[in-house]
Every structure is written in C-alpha cells, then in structure tokens.
Length: 288
Ligand code: NAD
Image (cartoon, rainbow, N blue to C red; front, side):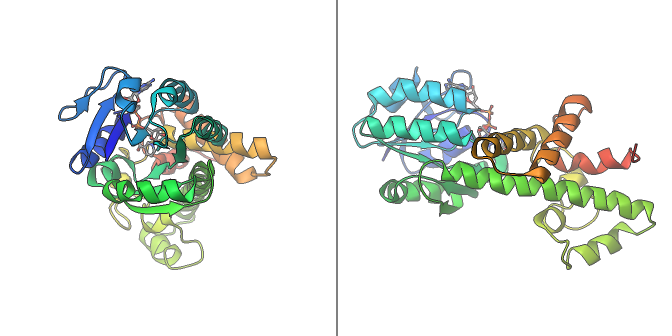
C-alpha cells in the first residue's frame, strides 16, 4: 500500500516509522524532518499517489487547511485517515468534503501516547464507512493493538472526548480523595488497597495511581513527568465542552474538570507536568 503521512511530530513520526517497515510511506511536515523516512516537499506531493493519506496534526483548523490542499490531488477512491485529536465538527466537515470529491474519510484518534505510538500499541477509535475501516484495519494493526469502529464520521472523535472527559473527572476525584484521606490520617497504601478493589476504583487509581510509591509504576513515581501532559488533558476537555455546547448536553463534571485543568495549566505551572500532578496541587491547598 502507498501511504502519505502528514504531521511527523511526537506521535506521527513513530507511527509513520512503524508503517514504513511494511509499506511504502512518504511523509511531510512543515517543521519536523525525522530521520529514516522518505520525505516530500509538500503535503500535496505526499498525498497525490497514496492509497491512504494519514494526518496527525495539532488541531481542527490545521486539519481543515491541510485537507483543502490534499483532497484535490488525491487519487479517486483513496482514503483520508485522520488520527489527530480534533473537534467533532471539523472531523465531520473534512469527511463530507472528502466524500464530495469521491474520496473516503475516516477519523481515528488514538489513545496510548508517545509510548504507544513508538511501540505500535495504540488504541484507535474510528468513525467512517465500513469499507474504509476494512481497508485501513491492517494499518491499525501495525500502529496499534486495538481498533474500535464507532460508527460514522466524527464518532471516533466523539468516543475519544467522552473517554477523556471520564478520565479527567476520575483523576481529579482520585487525587482529591487521596488528599482528604491524608488529612483524615488514612495511610495511602491502605487507601489504595481499599479503593482499588472497591466501588471507587477506576483506571486512574488502579493503573495510573497519582500517589508516588503506591500501586503500579506511574508518572507519579517519576516526579510527574508525562505520561499524559496536563495541557493535553486540557485540550481534550476543551473539545468535550465544545461538543457538549454544540449538542446541548449537560456535562457539569466535565465542565468543572475543564476549569480545574485550565487553572492548573495556565496559572499554576501545570504545563509540562503529568495530568496526575493534580495530587500535589491539592496537597498544597485548603478549602479556601
Ligand atoms: P506535535 O505537535 O508533536 O506534532 C504535530 C506536527 O504537525 C508537528 O510536527 C508540526 O510541525 C506539524 N504540522 C503543523 N501544521 C502542519 C501543516 N500545515 N502541515 C504539515 N505538518 C504540520 O503533536 P503530537 O503530540 O504528535 O500530537 C498530534 C496529535 O495527536 C494531536 O492532535 C494530539 O492531540 C494527538 N495526541 C497526542 C498524544 C500525545 O501523547 N502526544 C496522545 C494522543 C493523541
């Protein structure tokens, strides 16, 4: 398969490198020039002969601009597979534009971070037609360990922001509960032993415990170096609130989580720290 890969940053470069072991990959990025990949000198040049063009870009506006550049030159019937995390509206608009030009489109944001991109263990949440999913499934199998087909265009993004809204909320709840437990004189190991096997358990507690030295190894054990950076969590919570507003969904906990991560990232030096560093943030505070 001929693959064009546009956006060779922290995630895109290792994903493209994994694909290049089995397929003919031509990459393009406005800034990054990773070693070991064949590079084109424009997005259109990377896209024009490709059976599948993958984009891995920072946001919906950049995706829309790149889509307008590549769709006119892509081969009829080729697939535009966008793996960026972007707003649902842009994902659906780009998909409609692709279909209108005789192309196929699929949004497939990922979870698993840079480690997952490097090791080929990402999870893909895909939205788009069945036939396009079947064609790109072997590529998901190279770049990742799981791909869930969530329905039509935009549904991959919808699944991603709903999942990450739950994650942001449960991480905050887990961190604030640890600090309440500390102040009540409860040992953190005892707190973990109870909650991790009780109804308060979540992935935030059992797989990514925010308390250093407790539970499985996590960014808390590495001075809260990301992992999953707080500013990326804020990005996803902003996307969730944009989507909630667009469809009039009442999401009070998602709204509160967004406000807390915005405060942490923008005013409390949270940028560049793992999103579980909410725990030391709460430790330093009282109720006022
Ligand atoms: P990044 O900033 O490292 O990479 C984005 C790349 O896009 C950059 O190299 C940039 O130069 C390039 N770019 C920007 N505009 C361009 C254009 N017009 N044409 C071509 N290239 C252009 O970001 P990343 O961490 O690789 O994340 C990419 C996407 O994946 C984002 O949507 C992010 O939210 C999502 N994501 C990231 C992670 C993570 O842990 N980093 C995890 C899951 C999802």
